[in-house]
Length: 199
Image 1 (cartoon, rainbow, N blue to C red):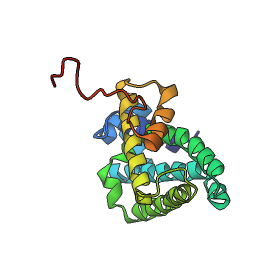
Image 2 (image 1 turned 180 degrees about the horizontal axis):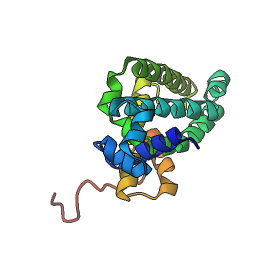
Image 3 (image 1 turned 45 degrees about the vertical axis):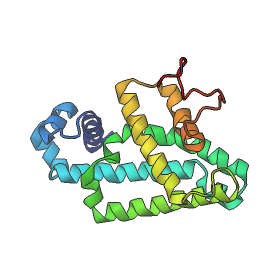
């Protein structure tokens, strides 16, 4: 692994733990001096921008590895469901590995990153539209809502993992099952009024 890759990996770990970390913090985490760090990146903005680009690379790789294009072309409920079940475990890992990028406002100011993100979003919206047409998900909601809801759940998964509130082995299923089925109980017992009639 090159020194640059080591620096980027250290920066990612550091920023995930503390999004406000300075270049000095990142250099210390990488085990190098500030001078070495500055030979590879001009400043913090350039470093964050490169990590943002890497997070988009991972998102595109996840879409491709999940067979998104083939599932959309197939259009069948089985193929689309299989794609979603393959994609969300990967997205959960991406959200954990690149967690800072999910909520870093700086990245939303970089025009080329915003444009590329929009392209990847459009691919995913097409997947949700296909899933609607196949009856996998509700047709009465905007397709883009599934994209936003999934994103919100990935942020929740990132935070829950950091807090130790969920087991890593369970979190992908929690995200996808919550997205597809919501949080309404399948138990038909009326639990709205406690015993005794008081609220």
